[in-house]
Amino acid sequence: MKRVITFGTFDVFHVGHLRILERARSYGDYLIVGVSSDSLNVSKKGRHAVYSQEERREIVSALRVVDQTFYEESLEKKREYLEAYAADVLVMGDDWAGRFDEFKNICEVIYLPRTPAISTTAIIESIKR
Ligand code: C2G
Image 1 (cartoon, protein in one colour):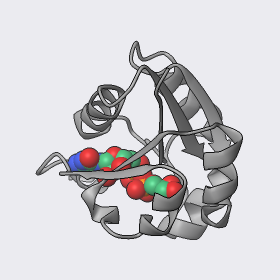
Image 2 (cartoon, helix red, strand yellow; image 1 turned 180 degrees about the vertical axis):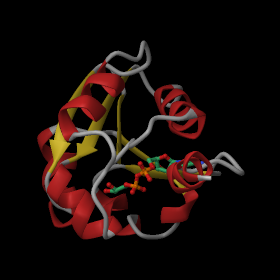
Image 3 (spheres, protein in one colour; image 1 turned 135 degrees about the vertical axis):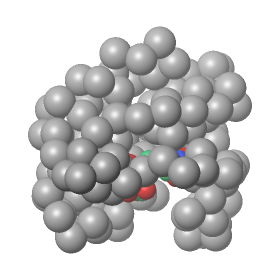
Protein backbone atom coordinates (compact mmCIF):
# COMPACT_ATOMS: atom_id res chain seq x y z
CA MET A 1 0.00 0.00 0.00
CA LYS A 2 1.51 3.27 -1.18
CA ARG A 3 1.33 5.94 1.56
CA VAL A 4 1.12 9.57 0.48
CA ILE A 5 1.63 12.49 2.87
CA THR A 6 1.06 16.21 2.56
CA PHE A 7 0.99 19.18 4.91
CA GLY A 8 -0.87 22.46 5.18
CA THR A 9 -2.88 24.93 7.20
CA PHE A 10 -6.06 24.50 5.10
CA ASP A 11 -7.61 27.65 6.55
CA VAL A 12 -10.96 28.86 5.11
CA PHE A 13 -11.01 25.66 3.05
CA HIS A 14 -11.29 26.23 -0.73
CA VAL A 15 -11.00 24.31 -3.99
CA GLY A 16 -7.26 24.94 -4.20
CA HIS A 17 -6.91 22.91 -1.00
CA LEU A 18 -9.34 20.27 -2.22
CA ARG A 19 -7.58 19.81 -5.55
CA ILE A 20 -4.12 19.34 -4.05
CA LEU A 21 -5.51 16.72 -1.66
CA GLU A 22 -7.33 14.90 -4.48
CA ARG A 23 -4.22 14.97 -6.65
CA ALA A 24 -1.99 13.88 -3.75
CA ARG A 25 -4.27 10.91 -3.07
CA SER A 26 -3.98 9.82 -6.71
CA TYR A 27 -0.26 9.11 -6.20
CA GLY A 28 -0.99 6.22 -3.83
CA ASP A 29 -3.58 4.28 -1.86
CA TYR A 30 -3.63 6.08 1.47
CA LEU A 31 -3.39 9.83 2.18
CA ILE A 32 -2.11 11.24 5.46
CA VAL A 33 -2.41 15.01 6.07
CA GLY A 34 -0.40 17.00 8.60
CA VAL A 35 -2.65 19.94 9.53
CA SER A 36 -0.61 22.86 10.84
CA SER A 37 -1.30 23.64 14.49
CA ASP A 38 -2.49 27.13 15.39
CA SER A 39 0.93 28.03 16.79
CA LEU A 40 2.79 26.75 13.71
CA ASN A 41 0.44 28.73 11.52
CA VAL A 42 1.15 31.97 13.36
CA SER A 43 4.89 31.36 13.09
CA LYS A 44 4.82 30.58 9.35
CA LYS A 45 2.06 32.97 8.17
CA GLY A 46 2.44 35.77 10.71
CA ARG A 47 -1.28 35.76 11.47
CA HIS A 48 -3.87 33.61 13.22
CA ALA A 49 -5.85 31.19 11.12
CA VAL A 50 -9.55 32.08 10.83
CA TYR A 51 -10.57 28.50 11.72
CA SER A 52 -9.08 26.78 14.79
CA GLN A 53 -6.76 23.81 14.34
CA GLU A 54 -9.59 21.52 15.49
CA GLU A 55 -12.01 22.89 12.88
CA ARG A 56 -9.40 22.82 10.10
CA ARG A 57 -8.54 19.20 10.97
CA GLU A 58 -12.25 18.26 11.17
CA ILE A 59 -12.89 19.58 7.65
CA VAL A 60 -9.82 17.88 6.15
CA SER A 61 -10.59 14.60 7.98
CA ALA A 62 -14.12 14.55 6.52
CA LEU A 63 -12.87 14.42 2.92
CA ARG A 64 -13.28 11.13 1.07
CA VAL A 65 -9.69 11.34 -0.23
CA VAL A 66 -8.15 11.76 3.25
CA ASP A 67 -7.45 8.63 5.30
CA GLN A 68 -5.62 10.03 8.32
CA THR A 69 -4.71 13.41 9.80
CA PHE A 70 -2.40 14.69 12.53
CA TYR A 71 -1.28 18.06 13.83
CA GLU A 72 1.90 19.40 12.26
CA GLU A 73 3.61 21.22 15.13
CA SER A 74 6.83 22.35 13.45
CA LEU A 75 8.38 22.67 9.98
CA GLU A 76 11.58 21.33 11.50
CA LYS A 77 9.92 18.00 12.31
CA LYS A 78 9.22 17.14 8.66
CA ARG A 79 11.68 14.21 8.52
CA GLU A 80 10.33 12.88 11.83
CA TYR A 81 6.77 12.99 10.46
CA LEU A 82 7.78 11.34 7.16
CA GLU A 83 9.36 8.47 9.12
CA ALA A 84 6.65 8.23 11.79
CA TYR A 85 3.93 7.90 9.11
CA ALA A 86 6.08 5.71 6.83
CA ALA A 87 5.43 8.03 3.88
CA ASP A 88 6.35 6.71 0.42
CA VAL A 89 5.44 9.97 -1.34
CA LEU A 90 5.45 13.60 -0.16
CA VAL A 91 3.22 15.83 -2.30
CA MET A 92 3.17 19.64 -1.98
CA GLY A 93 2.06 22.60 -4.05
CA ASP A 94 4.83 24.09 -6.16
CA ASP A 95 5.06 27.21 -4.00
CA TRP A 96 7.24 24.79 -2.01
CA ALA A 97 9.21 23.63 -5.06
CA GLY A 98 12.67 22.45 -4.05
CA ARG A 99 12.10 23.08 -0.34
CA PHE A 100 11.76 19.40 0.56
CA ASP A 101 14.27 17.83 -1.86
CA GLU A 102 16.46 16.84 1.09
CA PHE A 103 13.87 14.13 1.87
CA LYS A 104 14.33 12.39 -1.49
CA ASN A 105 16.53 9.89 0.33
CA ILE A 106 13.50 8.55 2.24
CA CYS A 107 10.52 9.16 -0.05
CA GLU A 108 9.44 10.46 -3.43
CA VAL A 109 8.97 14.24 -3.39
CA ILE A 110 6.43 15.69 -5.82
CA TYR A 111 5.48 19.36 -6.31
CA LEU A 112 2.21 20.04 -8.10
CA PRO A 113 1.05 23.28 -9.70
CA ARG A 114 -1.08 25.41 -7.39
CA THR A 115 -4.69 26.09 -8.37
CA PRO A 116 -4.53 29.59 -9.88
CA ALA A 117 -6.37 32.65 -8.62
CA ILE A 118 -7.56 31.35 -5.29
CA SER A 119 -6.10 31.77 -1.83
CA THR A 120 -7.31 32.12 1.70
CA THR A 121 -5.86 35.64 1.79
CA ALA A 122 -7.81 36.65 -1.35
CA ILE A 123 -11.02 35.20 0.10
CA ILE A 124 -10.55 37.12 3.34
CA GLU A 125 -9.87 40.32 1.38
CA SER A 126 -12.99 39.87 -0.77
CA ILE A 127 -15.13 39.26 2.32
CA LYS A 128 -13.71 42.43 3.91
CA ARG A 129 -14.71 44.45 0.82
N1 C2G B 1 -2.55 25.16 -2.55
C1 C2G B 1 -2.82 24.99 -3.90
N2 C2G B 1 -3.48 25.95 -4.58
C2 C2G B 1 -3.89 27.09 -3.95
C3 C2G B 1 -3.64 27.26 -2.58
C4 C2G B 1 -2.97 26.27 -1.89
O1 C2G B 1 -2.44 23.95 -4.50
N3 C2G B 1 -4.55 28.03 -4.67
C5 C2G B 1 -1.82 24.10 -1.85
C6 C2G B 1 -0.48 24.58 -1.30
O2 C2G B 1 0.51 24.57 -2.32
C7 C2G B 1 -0.22 23.54 -0.20
C8 C2G B 1 -1.65 23.19 0.28
O3 C2G B 1 -2.56 23.68 -0.74
O4 C2G B 1 0.39 22.38 -0.76
C9 C2G B 1 -1.98 23.83 1.59
O5 C2G B 1 -1.78 25.23 1.47
P1 C2G B 1 -1.71 26.10 2.84
O6 C2G B 1 -2.88 25.75 3.68
O7 C2G B 1 -1.40 27.51 2.47
O8 C2G B 1 -0.45 25.45 3.55
P2 C2G B 1 1.05 25.96 3.66
O9 C2G B 1 1.11 27.18 4.46
O10 C2G B 1 1.64 25.94 2.30
O11 C2G B 1 1.62 24.78 4.60
O12 C2G B 1 4.97 21.89 6.14
C10 C2G B 1 4.46 22.60 5.02
C11 C2G B 1 3.48 23.65 5.40
O13 C2G B 1 2.74 23.31 6.56
C12 C2G B 1 2.55 23.87 4.22
